[in-house]
Amino acid sequence: MSEAATESRSNATEYTVSEISGALKRTVEDAFGNVRVRGEISGYRGPHSSGHAYFALKDDRARIEAVVWKTTMARLKFRPEEGMEVIASGRLTTYPGKSNYQIVIDNLEPAGAGALMALLEERKRRLQAEGLFDAGRKRRLPFMPRVIGVITSPTGSVIRDIIHRIKDRFPLTVLVWPVRVQGDTTAKEVTAAVNGFNALTWDGAIRQPDLLIVARGGGSLEDLWGFNDEGLARAVAASRIPIISAVGHETDWTLVDFVADMRAPTPTGAAEMAVPVKAELEATLANLGARLSACTSRHLDRKRQAVRAAARALPSPDQLLALPRRRFDEATSRLGRGLTVSIERKRARLERQRLTPATLSRRLNETLRLTGRDIARARAAFFAVVRQSRARFQRNSARLSPAPVVRRQKLQADTLAGLTRRQEQAMARRLDRLRAALTQADRLLTTLSHKAVLARGFALVKDADGTVVKRVAELAPGAALQLEFADGNAEAIATSGGARPKLAAKPSGKAKEPGNQGSLF
Image (cartoon, rainbow, N blue to C red; front, side, top):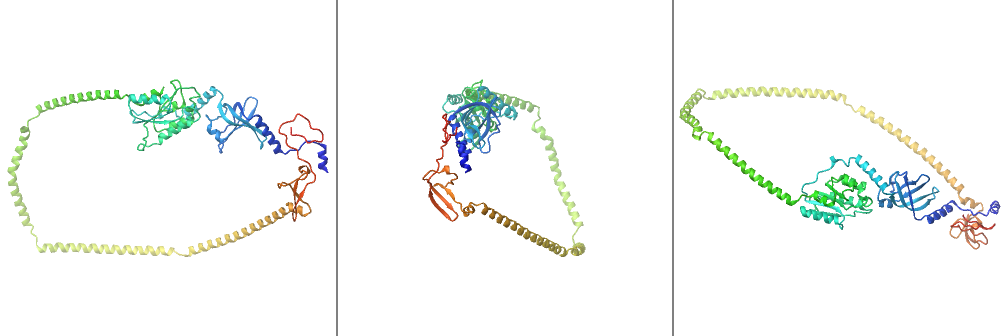
């Protein structure tokens, strides 16, 4: 009766919160399906763990939430940063969970060349603070490389100029890694090329280059923006192979120019830095060879003259050997007489020291006596050591007893038994508490179940789709119904009811008559 009275006092349609939120979402997305918004990035903390980025765009009077999905982040030309003024392209939508609206960004670009220069200066300061621009970390270029790797577009004039210049100066092997030098994928492809050349080995099927050249023709700041990528700059700085940067004209500077080991004003200049002129090297070698031959001849002549001068000052071989030859002759004459005297002396000493059996017996007895004395001393020392070891063992054995071990084992067994009893008691108490909680939850479930209400004589009304019908206004005459009772189900047909009003998609400027259903707007 109270519901009928309430409906009679107002003809406004009743909507759920989800219905209102859905209508607003469709309206906003239809009206602002493709917009460009200029503003300053606020609250940017980098991509979320899911890969999406959430921040806000603001100006001096308003603020709008923004989101960049993971797939869009991978296609952006630059990394968003806090405080940067940008132009965002996308669509407006609502977020029903917080009743606010946001822009889903499909493309993001800096607001003019001034913003790009500010971003470039900020990256340059950060990399310079890390020491990537220091001259001390840059390597010297090889004087005569065998293989040169070139990273550039395979269809432009740059690669033809480089190859032609190298062929004219010093023909050698040139490996070309084709990349796009303008566009969204420039930084990614050039980074992959640098890392790919560094991944090659010296003895592989494709030999690792001794020198790399990153080259591109001139262009505007936007055209060269891919070579200002921070990831590319770090890859060039980390390269084990020396790199020459030849990006743009002489007045064009990029981050790659600062971190590379050498910067060339033009691609042709890079080729000239990479290899020497073969003809000049051959002429230099010929000149040095002639100078070496002349120097060698003059040196040999000087040494030959010095040897001749020294030979004139030296005595003849007869003069040098006269005195040693005389001494040798005198020693030869004395050698026969000396040998005869020495033999006579040896014979006389041998005759004085004749060997007899008695002498051998005396020496043998003396040796046996000394040997027996040493054996007796060794036996006495051995038995003394044995007696000391036995006494020490007896003293230590008195201190060793199994009684302490048995007592400790008994104490540990008693402790284990006590802990086991406490565990069983605790488990029993916990099971009792859980059993009581389960019993209480079962009683509460039985009390709150709709089946208890059905048992008191009520019925549950559902439509043909199984949706619960709560109001008469939700029924249409002739609609099929399902009635659920306590002991089973039954089917019924509604003979009366009210049609539910449809939700209006757009505001209506025409007022409804009293008694009719109202619209959303």
